[in-house]
Image (cartoon, rainbow, N blue to C red):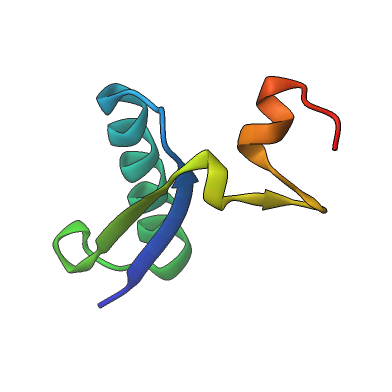
Length: 67
């Protein structure tokens, strides 16, 4: 049973998350030749303040604040 985990920054719509789950599952079915019912996809949402890009948090980057 493939278990796929993806961490994403909070703020995506339910439709976007559903599309990501679908694409990940479909890609796994093709790549591993496994049935849909055997695939699990787990999305974990992370607050932008807890997501680092280089030396800054994503929240700081999005605000355009220079440190």
